[in-house]
Image 1 (spheres, rainbow, N blue to C red):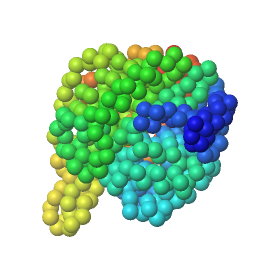
Image 2 (cartoon, rainbow, N blue to C red):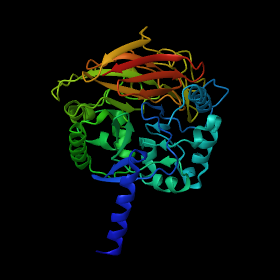
Image 3 (cartoon, rainbow, N blue to C red):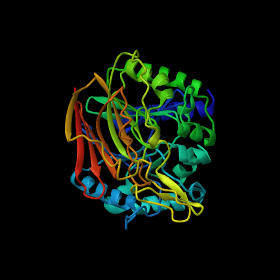
Length: 413
């Protein structure tokens, strides 16, 4: 036996002895048992974490006197003090100024903002978003070497965490999976033309199907999550429903019993439920309001000015926001629901959290997707607190400024 094989063999024996103190990762269809670089403080009877997305912007926005991400971090610290969390998870667009990532300034700034409550000392699991991938999809390798608590593997990959007598599965998908044809959407066309293609979406789909099939056959998997930056369904000026993901990804999520999809990309917060039909859900095309196409900004003297309301006008050119869906038009979806309950297994729950720090995307109120039940949507800053036990999953959307719980969903087993 070669020396390297002996070392691997002994390492596997050592890791097997450690049992539940391990986190299981699946990379490239191979499973590895890896020690955490930081201590993962898990209460095996409950798993709680915070979810943020589209937060990596460090400019004050609109009329906010404080960086929105700072408000989000402060609200997260408050909730984590009352209800301790084990880690922070992101759904992409972690860094918008990619050139500075290589000088560590952006990552260091992020960690500095999250120093309240020692959130910057918790494990962070980062998903690549389209802005992360415009530069490349491997800078996470460098970040992991510098910051002990940051994990950002290239997608696709899986993380399995212990919970009670079972486990929770998180499957992270790539930023370019949405580029699998067909799609007819200006925003997707633009995104795919700019992204660095390191994956063949067809090969990734083969990996996804094999992986989810394996996960669905494991009786000890209590909750099954998929993370992908672009949402499958959306009512936002950033983008509407994703035809590509509906036709290619959704059937696999239904067949292999995925409980929830965690996404960002749209700079707002949304919560959808999709009735499972064992991969046979008919595709019903969303009637996307043409007024919603494009971000609510108008050109003015070589710059873009934000359409906060319809009265915003560029004095020199005469361009006006009058015919656009402005921020004030699309702050919230007309729904008074504050709390909903569901039974596990009947729906896929889509949790969209893209409102953690970047410029907001108003909601496209006349473009409600016909394939989902839209329970909550708000174009404002916030984060999502997720609590998992063997018996239930609790999802809470929390407002960054007021720290109010805006919406809560509980899925019971």
